[in-house]
Length: 476
Image (cartoon, rainbow, N blue to C red; front, side, top):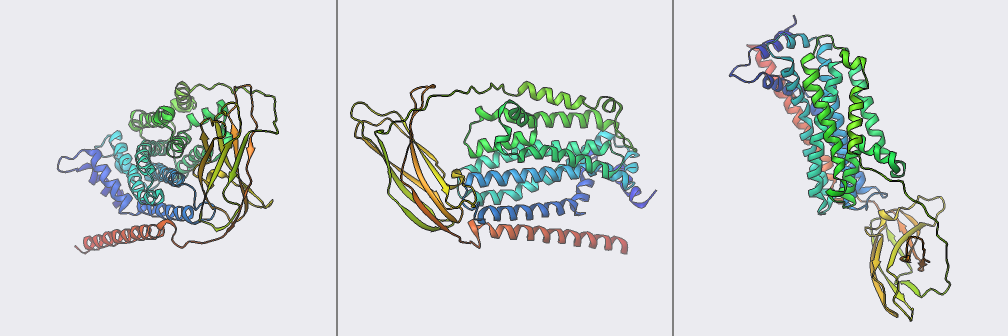
């Protein structure tokens, strides 16, 4: 038996001071993860990635002025996804890595039960998530720019991350327990991670209808992504999208139950898939899908209708803008007013909707998403009396360089579901946007530099202390 095997066995076999065996395993694994540097290395890479992403969100001319809520949502989503990746990698290496390093046999020969070994390793493997979330908090605070969305982001980030990180760690450990090699364990775990991650990258239009909603409900990462988007960006209440929390909870319950109640007591030296799962590989997946189908909201197909289009060349509505053109730099804010007048003489107007639109005048330029340019794309007006006017204020953020035409459209609310109305457009504002670069956008640059540097110095200090301890032990 090697020296490392003897050391591992003795450290578990003589817990000392009456400590629980799982606690001894946990402390040993925690020291190997953090003092050995593997977890710290992944956290350093995580901080570098998050710093680069935050800097790009705050400085890139295409994204620099997206609303703070969207920047917080994108950063939090990336932090959770990368945190789950770290948890999955460490979990996938926890058992199969011991097999390849020939140290698992020493653990199995100790008085510790197999479930205690798995519990200790699991708690150590989950430990990078709190560190990753703590690192993401300063970036979220800077990018929120004082918006109240920060509190919601911290709350739901902690809740959803704490649900999913143990679940993905547990899945990685399940694969690791049943894999004969570390390569197999890592490959299978990363394959599942990619399958979960890909739907979150699909555009929203690709996930409409009943099947699209079912996909969002079944996939724990997509359900989390959708919940965060609706809650943080679209201001939806928990009563409207709270059912999306059921999928992460069900996924975590299923994985952790399978890990601790079924797989942990059957931990073996040679690995291999248990007979029940080998004979019925779709059993676990089927149970999860059935559970998600039970809680998935019912969807009804949309009813399409065609109304007759009516045009009235003498509409009693006019809309005007107090600006004709403007030359600005990327990052500037443009404020203007619109005046909607109802010139009818007999009765009041219908309720009115005023919508803002922006068009790129360069046919080869980038497409424009008005929601990125303005925090408020539409405003609503109560019915106007004959001769009455309504004044509306608007603000537009110059996102992309180029030539653009901004115009407003006032839309009378139709009288019924089978009726339509004639929109009225205003004159346009010709916007010429010139490029402008910021060296420290939003004050995020110091965080992007300081946090990785501090973590690297901390890792160097731990390695120095470890080497010094080894030198002191060898000199005795």
